[in-house]
Length: 117
Image (cartoon, rainbow, N blue to C red; front, side, top):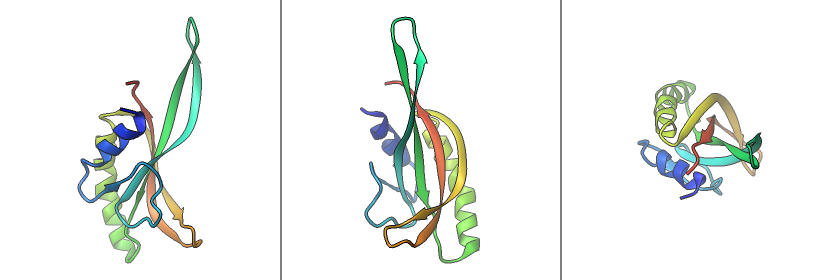
């Protein structure tokens, strides 16, 4: 199982999320997906070890600001707990997710370093 597959599987345990392996064509509230963001090479005795970080994107409801905030408040802890089972959760932050038509949806992004498999 790849790190990406493990992340998607973990997201599948969170009620209300629809995880996918890549950015959905038409994200909706509850859409969630990992995106590889950086690889750091850490020195080993025989070779440099690659440590990959992923950002996990989660789309929130956009209709009423109060609903967006309430959903984020409850969902963030659940997502972080689920992701903590496959790696180290580094940080989380609110984001505006830009769609192909240039509109945006609210969401949050969680930075994760998956464990080696």
